Amino acid sequence: MSNASRVLKIVAAALAVSGILFVIRSEPTEAVPLPAAAKYLGNVQTGNPGFQSMGRMSFGPDAVLLISDPQAASIVAIDTGDRGPVVKLKKRIDNVRGLIASGVGAKPSEVEIVDMAVNRKSGTIYLAVHRQADKQFALLTIDGNGKLSNFALESARYVRIALPGDAKVRNITDVEFAGDRVLAAGQSNEEFASKIYSLPLPLVHGSSAAIFSAETYHVSHKRWETKAPIQSFVPHEENGKSYVVGSFSCTPIAKFPVDELSSGAHVKGESIVELGSGNRPLDMFTYERDGKSWLVTNTYRFHFKRSLFGRSKWWGVRVSMDYLSSDATNENAPTRDVTKKSGPEGIEIVDALFGAIEVDKLNDNEMVVLRDADGELGLEVARLP
Image 1: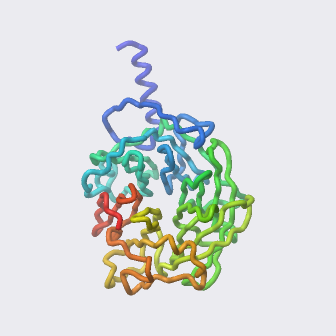
Image 2: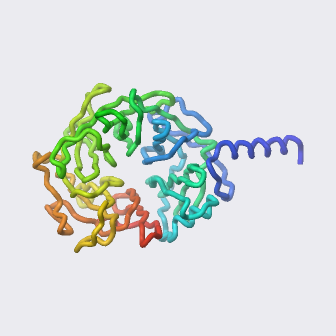
Image 3: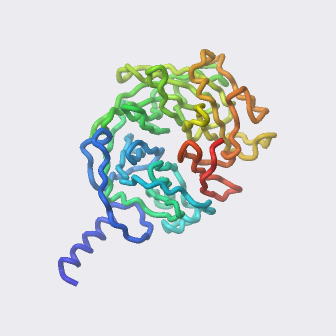
């Protein structure tokens, strides 16, 4: 072996150690650079984004992956280069936690799956994973054949945007592309703790975001609240105006106007549906079926008791998007009939979401579900109702 070859191997090894959070052995692949369109990312950096933490994730256009970094109070956008073709997961994977643990050299009990996002351009499933023993994070992928791989963060194309404010950011609860911007929800240590952040496109490395304080009427609590953050949300356009439609613990779904607001503004949200107290929403997406639009969310029931319709503390519901334009809001918002599987009209429990601890849309017919079954985690593609 030549001296030059030895040097290159040493450099490559050093980069791998310094740039990757922990390693999964995989077959080498030839990297093909596919930069995202300039309208999405600006001043793109190449190298390790240097995550202090990994939180909520979502995919946007052109295979751009958004990952929140709550400890660093920022959003990282990565050009994954993963642009298809679509190959969805071919069969259910059992014991997902064990699969991940064996790949990262940890015990199953030491592995936490922080969040899951599905790249709809390729069908690849992305997992943010926390190895609790040494408090390290990694970004993993599962392809259509069920193969687990490490996403090479040491050579990522990325931008990082700080979330502004004089107060400390306690958490970032969701992040999504929304037309001409990216929106994030979170919580600070201020009196008006619930926050919405707006990041204009293109996302420029080193830039910052506009910040709004959010206040919401909680139907179950019968009062306006400012501290509870939006747990999950989707962007929504209505009559040419932009909104955030988000869900909260105990469990109202509310919409917030986000157009024509200056940074620092205070935003009041209208509660449009109440799903029932004692629940915490987890994920949210929309889909269309037979000309009708639906909002889907999975939730976690704090005080689980088996009932006629429920067989897990994780469950999910779909809500007709028609409710978003209803005049019945706040104290008059329609409330789900918690004693029945459906009702009022346009609010229905989704059987395929029982046990779902993570869910994301694959297309208008299917979703990817990470499901708990008596403590074991399974990953599968499920039909949307």
